[in-house]
Length: 329
Image (cartoon, rainbow, N blue to C red):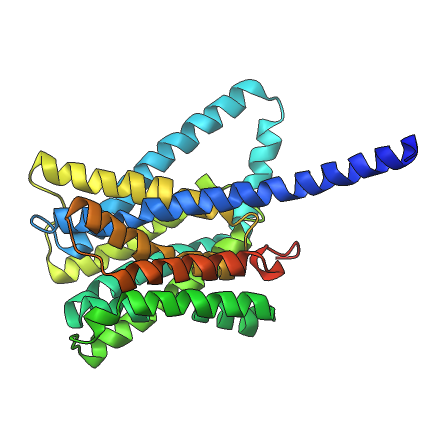
């Protein structure tokens, strides 16, 4: 092999590595983020002795907004101290933010509404039915992406999604056999799945222009304001009474919202919202494992098989080109 051919081969390998590494970094970030949000059920369960689900969501949002605001403020101060072009860049950022304000509003309102509908559905129907219907998010995400943006998904991606969904249904099968529910609770769970699909698609658009921390800060701030009317109507207590209650809601905000959602938003710079919706199916798997470890809940052999099926479906979907975010999006 000539020296020119060797240089071309090395350049090709370097290009492949450069392209592949961000994808794997995004996948790792997504996985850690899903592990983070999977702790939400545990934190909510621990805090339910003091707060309603709606008040818990409100505390999750305002605490994460304050934390992210502090982080963004420190980053802004550092940039101003280290660059002479900050004023020009800040003007551009402000102009860009104003242009996309409707997307930020959509993200914050969809996120808050998804959480509230999900919490209400659990009070109106069985947890098993609500969970299964809520996990239809990948179907709605792909459907909305096709209807709104004309996005197409290849057969490998669709097959991986079908495999992962079947695994989730098997996980909930034992509970579904004895589950009973009301139509309004089932409908609320479906609406929450549609809203999750909506905010995933919105974040995919915002991620092309803004950092993950900025998107999450404004989304959390808008979602906080959106939950206040619900709390006013229900008359629920806003804040915990004990230090343990504060510990639970702070953990919910930092672990699930700042770290979990933050890493998921970060991964959307490289991964499509459709694939991220499929990866969300890991949430019930991880939650079941946490319940097994923390609360000593029994896991059947069929549950372990279902876990493997979900992982296989997600792995198969990530091999598809549809798992990677398109440059134009």
